[in-house]
Image (cartoon, rainbow, N blue to C red):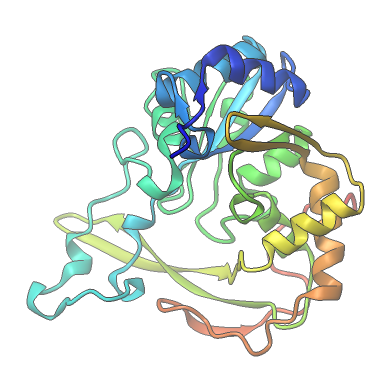
Length: 292
């Protein structure tokens, strides 16, 4: 059995340099520590390497998603009959205390718990940020249209940020959701989605309008982006393939690609969605704008 490569903070820092990461940059980072091999120091070493590369003027952003707070109607394979009103027992979202879902990764949970980090207010798809632009990125995250231009993703566009995929595939590239909001592809749909909020003595739920997003063709979009020779840097760190992609050209490319290659007219809405309707025209939320 081939032993796993050992990856250090210094090696990660060198790889970030090869990806073009520089002091003062704004980056959104997706990570898979397992893909590197054995990381000496784990998520802490990755975070320290990122801070080394970005310097005090750089801003680090991570997804800090909490799908564990979704309404029980969205759960699969759970026997809820003997549990009473499970939905009222959902704990309220707390930006300081609610942990990031394990499926999102160890680095995001580390970042959201840092004393100088800030976290956005969305109870399901918050983002955490550390650095001079942190408050700009996370402020005013709307409950409705959660990945629109008014979300942290829109702020990353405004800041001309870069996506760092450290061992993750294109399916984890959250910035591609911005393109879904911009491109009125066949079968695009909007509906209502339930969010939790703390009531006087129990958690209450309310519905917000939302776009039905889908990551199923993100790998194909990423492959096409790479084949087209769009702006991209790639490096191997340990056993991991890492990519650096600027947000703006990626979203522009993806929006064009969705118009010509995605058709979800036969798609089925997931559990938890209500009153799903076609959304083939402009959405009633601010677009990224003519820049796309």
